Length: 231
Image 1 (cartoon, one colour):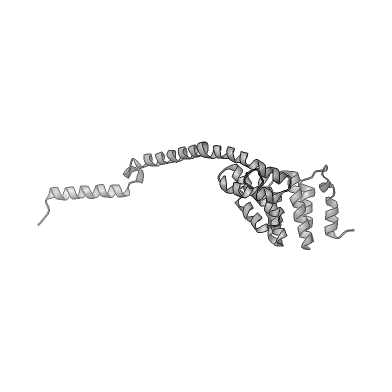
Image 2 (tube, rainbow, N blue to C red):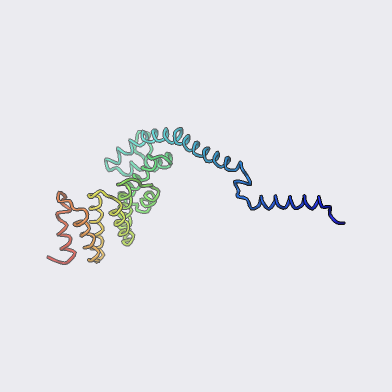
């Protein structure tokens, strides 16, 4: 049975509308979708702001107050006490890093814990803590890399130690800190018998971080002559 003309016209119109909808951009097909997306983003931003203001900031204040006893023990070189039991009912850096995770103070507790482990000869745990430490700013990235270099040097993984010392020296614009790690880099290269690389590191000190007031800088010629085998 043949379709009536009106039916054929209606079918064509439906097919045209369907084709138009399928090829239209998503914002034309679903005009309210962008509103939902924008609303979700705004809700997410608002939720993050509330989280920071109502949870992170008060938690940070509490963390700073809780850390002072561990910091006191750290300053006395009592690294095991600072790490685990600083006394007075206060937590050590290990517990603090976990308890105040997500705060700047909790993040710094990882750094302190890493140094404590390094000073106690537990290099694997020192590495683990430093890897959890989020280093930002002009000094902390260099310190983090330098401590990791010390850990790997103690483990006699000299290739990794050299990489970290170089990263530490390159990570800061502080001349004294850069000089310190370039010197470590050169001395470890010397220890490995790689005189050319050692001289290159020492030359970086002489050229890039010149500081005539520093004893290390004034003595750098001695290191260069030593690496060259000049007596």
